[in-house]
Image 1 (cartoon, rainbow, N blue to C red):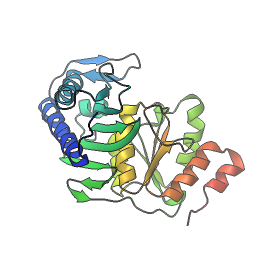
Image 2 (image 1 turned 180 degrees about the vertical axis):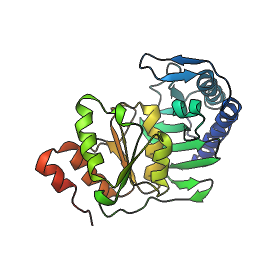
Image 3 (image 1 turned 90 degrees about the vertical axis):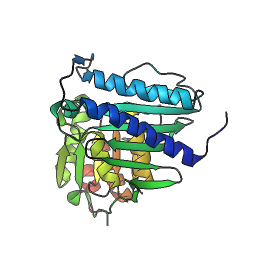
Length: 272
């Protein structure tokens, strides 16, 4: 397999985002037929049409690359290079007419994210970052921000209702120590970590198309995104993720997620 130059991959990923935006904008705040998956999450014709458009573009330009997306079965998912797509991350927000949904596009090599795009087609915001490409927002460099400790941190999560079973208590411990929790932004919240407006982000029961693009974008902005055990995110990771702009804050948050009682209080001590 011939590896295309990195700049060509970045340019192509941006063309994918532009094509996705064209489809999504035509459907935003328009009547749509809605179906519900087994997990009761909604899906629309716009989700499917967007992903089908991107898959066709990838197949034409890079026929030996794999594709994993939310709406259709994987194609060559075991390939060395795989595109991972969520056409509309935050379909509920999309259906509600609230522009905090995003299109997520990741490129993986050997299962590891090496490039990510987070695109909000209504507000016209696009974060791009990866190996050798420091994160930009609409072409302007952005960076994560430092944070003095959990008590000063802003945490984003999709919804407290998503943390069920064994995930509920760790999340509630973390949420109880931060300055406040911002709900409802899905992948858009992770983009704000890369841009230095939010300090922490966590979610559970995610799939690779939910977390790989944010992982690449946040890392290229100077932050870190792992699973709840602190392991790097790959195609094979589980669904519990933690992102932070400040690495010391990430360490403290990991300890808090793992440790009840007195250990949790120690983990919440200021990080510097």
